[in-house]
Length: 196
Image 1 (tube, rainbow, N blue to C red):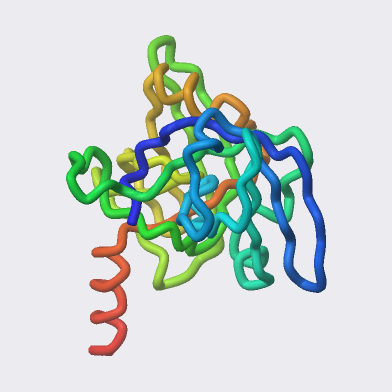
Image 2: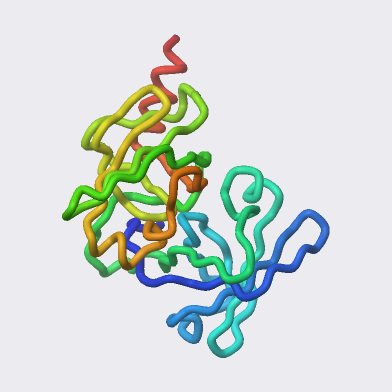
């Protein structure tokens, strides 16, 4: 389980294909602290550490993960948001994030509001994928509050600290991001669909 509070950034150092799997090797300031079998969220995608060597570590993405996320668009040199799993004795600063990406979205607009940034995203229509104003959404692993909620789009506001310390500074119009919808909202949507 994660909180959506980004700990640091990781850089893609190597990408290797093996059958339908893809092995990603990253460098990060916390690489030397990671352990094999540890779960780490990369742009909100929970992946298991398979090897650690000095400041480098490797994770593997299977086809299902590649189909649902933006990982298959990543290339050497790209930067991803990194969060280790939540410590049981820590404060819960974000919201409940599973690291299970539901779908991707495309950035439609980015506005500099002279003190904050507004990002507007659009995703494919799906009754399971819902947002509500002032509800939670996870974008590339970042826990955020929905500002404007529409049927298949929404906007969020980003403070300067988040903009500078995550890969939001790299998101432009047309960029593809990972979305994890609020887990409580997903269960409510599921219960409502059973009743119909």
